[in-house]
Structure formats: structure tokens, C-alpha cells
Image 1 (cartoon, rainbow, N blue to C red):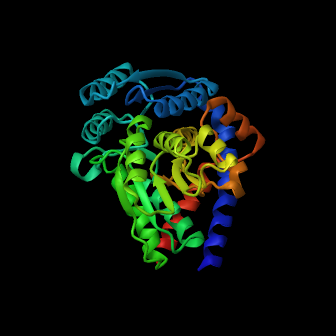
Image 2: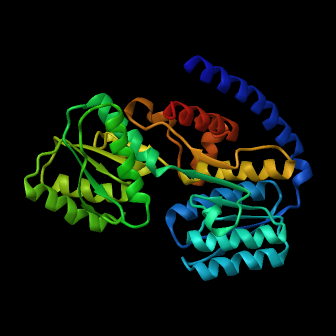
Image 3: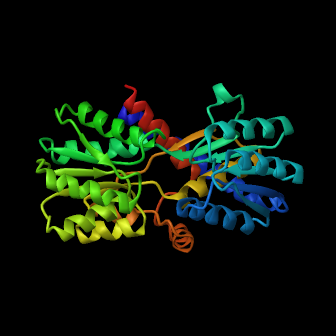
Length: 348
């Protein structure tokens, strides 16, 4: 099976190189396009994502209109309607709400305007709106990769987690992923949640303080994002805790420095820069009439000291410098093939 998968990826990439060359050759025909970008709200992750998206579009000579929904579902729908009225050739959305996303998609469908979603997307079955393309990271996979690392390196460890905000489904996906990986490797480890830091540095601090004060035995703490990890590191440093292993998710510049310094063992990357670039490639393929995986889950390798040089920068200038230098994978075809490989292996 592994030989078949390797052959499949090789063949896919050979064809993709031809397709990518064709796309580049056809770029001249795409100049003059007009697109709209709808941001969910004032979030640094979203800002960095559309910063890359806008730069790519302008480099193609496209007109770009950027609107912000301020986390309002109503404003998101209004923004999409405004872009349709404006006559844009395509729309990319970071949604503020899955239900408004469905309505927005249906409006675009009815108007014949292609609509792409990045990060989150509507449930097509319940909302009736169909996305032209979607690119996002799997929070389940972020948890799974960290769980797999534990299973391979510390199969007898006591593991706790500091979770994100409950109710969005994101923290729950992280938790399910890490536990499923530990179960898949028959470790017998049960991850114990010690509380929610709600994705925030300041709110993770009391959770970490309570964990240490409780006297609970643990070897590893999985902190579900790097913002909360900053709070946990602060508490551990203040209390002189040096014998615990920290795992996390994000892979942004600060997190990479923690790994280099030995403060964090591993992080599951979800760079907004790459997410934007892959979605943009979907849009280019759409305009060129080329096929693409409509619903793409981006799978990257867990970042540790061993592969830290392959980390994808979040910041625009550093990201494009890495693209130019060939420092990391960014081609849509590569990630399409990788998704098929990983999901086929897990479904065996």
C-alpha cells in the first residue's frame, strides 16, 4: 500500500508540475480580474491570511476589494451582497458564522459568482449553499499529530491538556484527535483536561497556576494554541518548572523560537500564509478551467527541532522569501496528494 501511495504522489506531482506551468503561462490572460475578500473580523491570524491573499492577487494585476464583517453574520451577508452587486469575478470569505456562510454561498451561487472559503466553511447539506473551493487545517489533525508524537516518544507518560474555548467545536476536535492517536497506538494513556484558557494568554495563566497548585502528576501538557502556551510558559518559568514537556499548535514565529530554545517540544502548524496561497491557487485554477480538490484539508508535518527549518512563516515578507527560496512546499497539487495519502492510510 505504501508503495502505491508513493507512486500515486509521484505521478500526481509530475502532472501537477505540468498543470502549474500551464497556470503560470495562462496568468497573462487573467489580468484585469476583480475579486472581493471578506474578513470575519479584526484577528491577527485573519489579517496575515488576507495580507498574503491580497498581495498574490495584486501581483496578478487584479483589483481587490477587502471588506470586514466585524464578527457579525448580518454584515458578512451584506458584504457578500455588496461584492456581488459590484460585479466581482470571485469572492473569498473567512466566515464569521457557519450559518451566514451558507446564506452567503447561496447568494453567490444564485448570482453565478464563484465563492471560496478559507479556514471555516458552511455545512452545504443544511444551508444549501455550495462552496466553489475551501482550504482549511484540521484541528482534529493538530491534536492527532501531537498524540502520535507522544505515543512514539513517551508511550507511558501522564498527559494533561489546557483547552481552547468550548462550544465552537475547535477545542473538541483537538481533544478528540490527540486521544484517538494515543488509542490508535494502544498506549493506554487518557488525556485529562485541566481547564479552558479560551485561546487567550491571560486566561491560560490561572489554569496553569491551578494545575501546579493541585499537585496532579503529569509529564506532558498539550496546550491547544501558542497564545495560551505563552501564558503557560510564563507560569512555569515563574515557578521554576523545568521538567515538563509542552506540546502545542500554530507554528508561528514565536512558537518556532520556543522550540529552538527547548521550551516547547513540538507544535502542529497551521500557517495562515500557506492557507491563503493554496486558496488563491484554487481560484487561479478555477479561472483557468483546471480541476482541483474542491474541499482541501491541509496536512503538514509536526514541527520539532529535527525539521524546524521547514516551518512555514506566518508573516507575508518572510513567507514570500521562503517561496522564492524553495524552503517549503506550497504547491496546491502537493497538498492535494498529501491529503489523499493521509486520509487513505487512516481509513485502512
